[in-house]
Amino acid sequence: MTKAVYPGSFDPVTFGHLDVIMRATEIFDEVIIGVLHNSTKTPLFSVEERVNILKKATEGMPQVTVLPFSGLSVDFAKACNAKVIVRGLRAITDFEYELQMAQTNRELESGVDTTFLITSLQYAYLSSTTVKEVAEFGGNISKFVPEFVAKEMQKKLREKREC
Ligand code: PNS
Image (cartoon, rainbow, N blue to C red; front, side):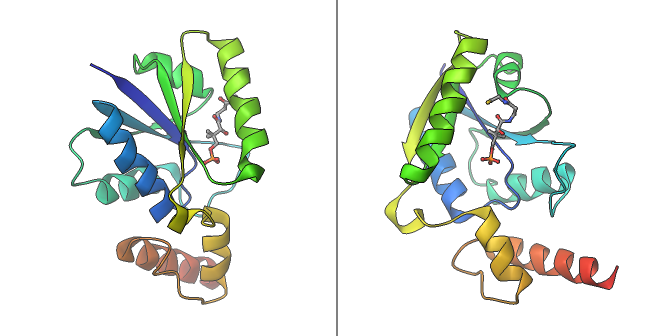
């Protein structure tokens, strides 16, 4: 049985991430999405909220599990008994960072390798950061994230403004 982990921040999950997840389920029997809890960053959504959003977004994908993690991605992969880390690659700008991360991870844990899925063309420009920026300024994000995620973002941004 082939198992892979797909670690990331997913703040928020976009159609680009979902495309990678769906394609990963066509390659691996089980795909475990690892949602990073990074205490040095202030995400829009808490790790619990991001896990719940991803669970809802992947409801129709029985091979997918969503778990929070903190620390190293390779340790998360080892704890899940997975030998493969999946990452999406959008453009040449992603490559340098992803290459460095994949090589670092392999130095840390030679039993865990990274597989890259090239992001589908229609999502090549998408990033969680730009989606957040568009939403913050009241732009339409329906092309970038599922409808329920857009609603959750608008609710969260309203709450933030009221604070
Ligand atoms: O969605 P992102 O923010 O591009 O995901 C980045 C992520 C979570 C995969 C990366 O930051 C990561 O693996 N963080 C955990 C710490 C780690 O393993 N660092 C070593 C790799 S250099």
